[in-house]
Image 1: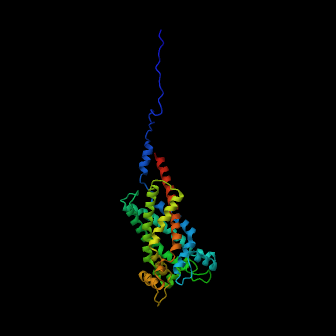
Image 2 (image 1 turned 45 degrees about the vertical axis):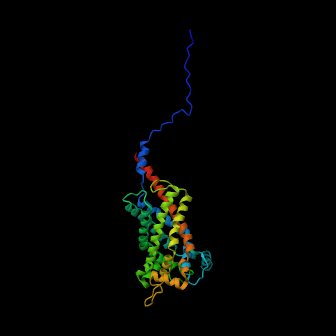
Image 3 (image 1 turned 30 degrees about the vertical axis):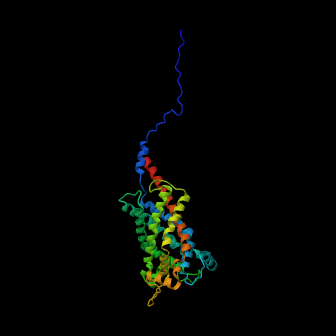
Length: 338
């Protein structure tokens, strides 16, 4: 008998092996479709804004006091931000660096609640009801709109209170003993309308600030880190801080003069039968430039940038982290439904 020759089976090489086929997940596809361009509600943004405002106010209040004092310093007492902070601390005590803190906290929390909540509503409306990705133009005009609204509803009266408190020197024998005392005395002695002194430059400042703020932040998120509204992505802490720092610096660099004008008008007291020094925002700007030089319209720009840019970095970081947490929770709830 002849021996039976058995065929030799060669093992397939890795190169010849077919790639494994992964079955598509209907659940994953359904969730991806549901979450596509989905954004959190304006209420979530409102809560996130309040948290960001509290963090900013408690962290950076001394810089706001220095900015106000420098803008009111027509005599040239302070030689810069650090000299101003040092002088206030040595002459009036460290507590003086936190003058106006309580109205500042309330002001920022209400302002940011309105800003971030209303921005989402306006942005979605201008985008045809789609809460997902929007153009730079829509972000610009949404920010402009919300900035003008917050200026009249919240910012102006609260900044009048804060400015009147911060311009007082020392801690004893002060005209105003607190935020409520400011409101009562201003209304009783000068009339209700003086709670809105400097409203026009405030509207210009807030409108331009938020137009550039929201537009810049959206562009930086998208083009630097591929972060879009509703995608559930949480950026690294340093990335949101950097974006907020850059976005928050654009507006103040462009509208510094109207901020000085606003501060001068808000700090001015009115008495019956007396003609006030500043009668309107254009006249105020012209008078400051004439008496103190054009450079005076940029007084306080360093502490303002030092407060606002890091302030926006802090606020945006808190807002984006709170928003991302809600987006993640939203995804979990959607997953539970399938």
